[in-house]
Image (cartoon, rainbow, N blue to C red; front, side, top):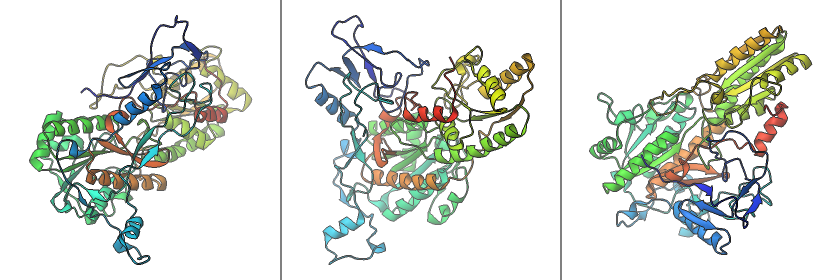
Length: 529
């Protein structure tokens, strides 16, 4: 499946005398916290870069006075939202989404005051994605486009209910599907999508069981959904509809959508599920179907591009505290105790970083984005020796994707096409035990892996609120006529983003960011090189 997306790269030969020398902003991470996994080591020296860049398919020459305008136009083009009027000549109708009956009338009840009370979002509303103007590419976490770190506005579409809609609610059949692995908050999103659809007046709502598999697997029937059915599903973890990885060919899924006469499809899933949703959207467009495909970003790893956070992440960090606290008690109570906790995070270390920060008990945090060595004078094991000598015990938190370059690589993949990682937690456990045995120092190691515990629980209050708003906005986006979009929160504001732009690459921890620096300050760990 070919997906277009944003890339920011730098061109031309480094021997050019017209080049300017400046700091690379974020270790292969020009914007918004994503990195290239092709190079793990953090650069400490300034890198000579040319005054030329490529954004999307736009070749930018920074010596051109109009480069900023060209960049802005390219951004606006790529972040415009696909709409059903792109393929259909449709006239909108007045929205059926109104909260007036639940409000106390104000004033004389004229139309303008009613609209204001109901809080509709104007179609031209935008939210600013990037809010810090960096004075220099040397600034911590700097996200620069050009060598001068010029300020360029990045506007994205604001989410919410519109005054006009493009579907007749009583004629709509809406379907909801949850894909990938479990995540806290899935039931909250399902519940709010159903509630909001019914507020619009939709009567025909179904759930597709067990992910995309439910579209083609024999014996799996769609589940009728209503407020009564989903009223209390948020009180438990998991997915009321069930989940699965992988799926059939896009054409088979769209065949099923056509046969079922589905008008709106809500896909709750991560990067892979979003790619599938975008493929479904493109196939529906190709067939000129009036179907809105809207995604809700679900990933416990918090690794979807542009998003402040994805639902389930806060709950996972909170649940991880149980494991860290247990490991801490074990380590603190033992002679030369070592607590080792492995948390989720295939390619992004957000859970490990935030869990380490929130606990305040971690001495060493290892994540996929920052390379390290275990052996040698500056290795992790030497530092553990130092910790045992100075404080008598130590705590280590590792992300599951950390240290993969130190392990034998596996070519095996799961049903979603993800490479099956070697178990670094077990490797770390064995290395620590062997190291202290070899040097004749007693060490009492306790290893805790709460992987599935942190994703199977009910969403906490913070995630429940996020799920509520994301689910509602997904329905508002579908009725507004958008398709091939995802509902997210960026810079504290709720927005719609085109799916191709958020799946170009997973979001990663920026080793030059203030948050990672805060984590290092909290743990006190050295540079393990």
